[in-house]
Length: 82
Image 1: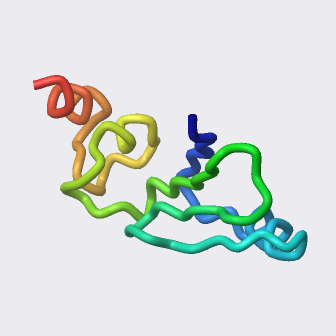
Image 2 (image 1 turned 30 degrees about the horizontal axis):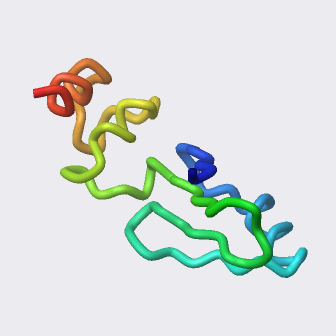
């Protein structure tokens, strides 16, 4: 099980607070940040606005942002399902 937070914009305050509490936050892939430290579950923070336009379309379908790879949420969902 992984705990995922999905945001359209980078959560500056949240990540600053997590780092201040002693957790490490590392970006492994464009728009996907992993939190490490003394955690019960793996945690990732997904920033849909930073994701590449042709990857992770299933996650982009959750976003309000249409200009980065999907003309609409329906386009993203159809691409994911087909």
